[in-house]
Amino acid sequence: MLWEKQYQLLAQVLADKGIDIERVKDKLKKQVIELPSWAVGNSGTRYGTFREEGAAITVWDRIDDCAEIQRVVGICPVMATHVLWDVTEDGKYEPVREYAAEKGLRIGTVHPNTFMGQQFKFGSICNPFADVRRSTIEHFKDCVRIARELGSKTLGVWLADGTNYPGQDKLRERKHRLFAGLKELYDAMDADMTLLLEYKPFEPAFYTTDVMDWGMSYLMCTKMGDRAKVLVDLGHHLLGVNVEQIIAVLLDEGKMGGFHFNNHKYADDDLMVGSIDPYGLFLIFDQIIEAEEDNVDVDIVYMLDQSHNIEPSIEGIIQSVMNVQKAYARALLVDRRKLQEARQNGDVILANRTLMEAFEIDVNPLLNQVRVEMGIEPDPLLNYRRSGYAEKIARERKNKGANTLGG
Ligand code: AOS
Ligand code: ZN
Ligand code: ZN
Ligand code: ZN
Image (cartoon, rainbow, N blue to C red; front, side, top):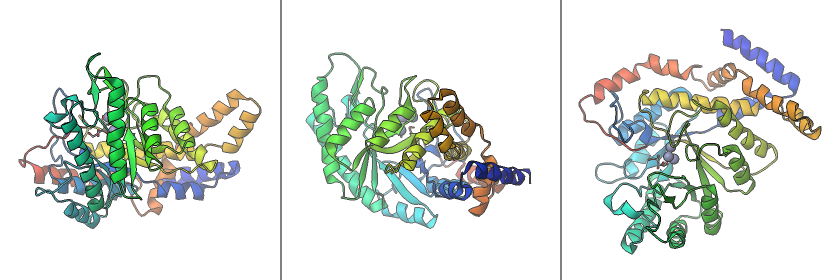
């Protein structure tokens, strides 16, 4: 095979640079990305949803689909979950955990749901009405129990809280309510659980959002304690924001907790990660690897959070996972010695070129080799297409009704 020859050549080139390819492969094999259960069902935009033949309808379908994705990619043995959706019809979570385990998956980050329901019109924990705040906190505490039942150690909180008009509510008071609510959740967690707090500049609220940026998330997490960290969703930044710098700061402060991977051109577009800006994704991984090499304690939960509106969801997820792998692989191949030298010499051009050189490497042969060594087919997408799984679920799930989830 041509790629095998390309791999041999790459191994030689890297050896000349003093990069140990065995170590790189080892890291690539250990990479873990959580699959969002909600991404395999039908999802859409506020303008409508295009139904996909074979889209997951039940929680069992979602587990089956994630297991199929894991079969071909090999680095996603975890399903991130939304508490309202990934539950049995009679409200049980343990069977979900058991079925997932049967399929070779564990349940990852548990996401509470504080945005679907009439009571949330003015927010959840920041709501001006005490009864809504109270019931949200009860839901949070319930999520801790659910996490236990699902065997998960991570809670991922995204709040839709905010206001739409100046004057609508007292902003400082909303901040107090925010902290009080989060702190109750934090205190209810087990000692080995972590809380990840996601931020987002706008939407659904359009004037203020209570956790609007990394600074606010960082502030809340710092006030809560060590087991609260920031979750960075790549689509949750205004245009022009330098995300990799945010990652560097959070890593340095021990507050970089997790990612929701996706890609955007405008706002929270939830497109496939790496589809619009693969270079930006590489630069994020570059920060992570650099911190690791500097012995910074890096403990990050990687998740996808995307919405597959026109592409087949499972294929979109497979492609996304591969895009993340590519970015990670390239960041692992940065010639750090040369980079360091260039920096010491004040050589801006060579420093930048060193990064670009890694970004320009065709890492497909390397990733193919990693997969073969892991016992899976080199091309996950073709492997999936050949399996007949898409046709099978389209047949089996046809006429079973369509389930539409948010994203
Ligand atoms: C919303 O914009 C966020 O990205 C959340 O992570 C949300 O919980 C997720 O998209 C599932 O609805
Ligand atoms: Zn998200
Ligand atoms: Zn989002
Ligand atoms: Zn998003």
